[in-house]
Length: 450
Image 1: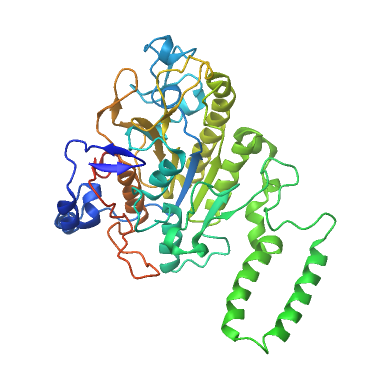
Image 2: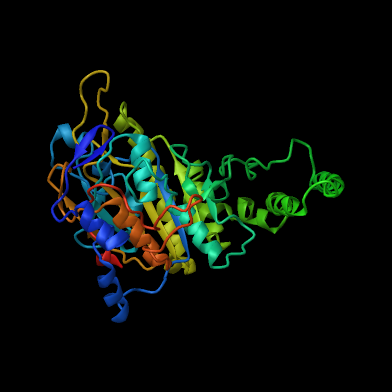
């Protein structure tokens, strides 16, 4: 049994005890022992890297699986509410919620993970579990997948003028994404609103009325001051400062800023994504992928719908539908989908049964027992469903998928060895796919769609 936030959590069938887990190492989380992995490598079944970048559409607060990618229109009014039908997609046998008609026509490009599950209904803990692919422990605060990707890309020689890990428009806010890797691997948050007429990279926006020429003058003055200070300080410290300065000024004045400039896009393209913050964030993510950024998170909050759930869904789901469908279509049209993973989901789902009593009056609560995520591109097959829930969407009845199964699969497709070690400032043993203390369960890598 594992204790998380005061709850004792049992193992699913096939779960591993601590002594077995420590024997096989981190691969036990993915249903593979080291011997299994080496055997697959020898047979040529371990796939070479297909993905270069990841776009994570993070629906902060927890999107409702039964209203989106696992519809249950016949579960009754207490479960389905006003959503009484499911939409057929362009893949026979696969249906999505009635508020997602555009994504229904893109279903051949993505696969739905309907067996997602983990043990925490608390926002902070659930976000940590989903973002890091591990359970919390008292020993190590693990980095998010995006931070690990940034590190590994840097080790592989990433020299891009854009930051390797970008958050549009903000960081997650639930925990420190860089974990023990340190602040240099935190995501660069753009700030601002990509749908705004005067959108600029947040945090590096010139004051009103300050021209590029004036900024260049300030830059020269700053360099003059720095040259004096170098006579009194160690040179190595200022070299590090110079590198950060050059990155910052490059985002304001240099070639890097072009990737953030949505005014380059035709109006019909911007309309296709939707003139919303989320829609334009998806468009910006596509531009950053084209610019070589390895990991981009589009962080969209507002999904914590304890009250006025269906009113909110009627507003938010069309925005999700339009932005995500345009992104998938654009990536496919330009050939970028082959090398770009798109993953969409949140920290958990929401209760299939509607909360009718006051003060909720038709809301849905947090629900981690069963929920859905979507993956597309980067070598993942489209037009498939992995896992299944019962008739009301309350329990996983087929093929449970744990967060570490998903993160391990992402690493695999990116060519990152999931059982390699990460550097730790105090020399602790830490793996890319982490060893989570206590009892763990796993459904295995997503081999069905890899």
